[in-house]
Length: 150
Image 1: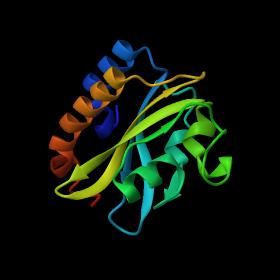
Image 2: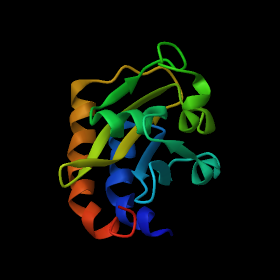
Image 3: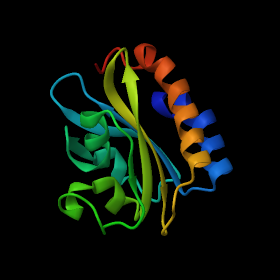
Image 4: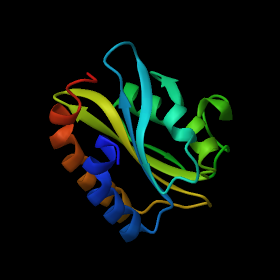
């Protein structure tokens, strides 16, 4: 198991089970440059996520990190900003709906926690609250696990 998988697996698996979502993913910004990668995706259908790199401000993770605000997509690719190819995690995992919340390291956004569904899904406030709760736990460990990244 990769280091980030060990780190997020308990909370990520619980979130996946409790929300009956298809995917829980962790995106992190690299220290060198503005690239963002997906070191861990629970519920993945393939290994493509390991090779995804997006630029700061692109895709769901890049937009969440650059704005430091959550982002919700309920019927991909309808209503997105930009092209569908700008959202490689959505394409790679065949996601139709996703909710992503920023992860802060200190005061700076350095990552995103994502839940995704492979069908149309409208996110409830309760679901969003559960994502935020898990995100806060993940954030508390970002300095420890991210010291080589940012």
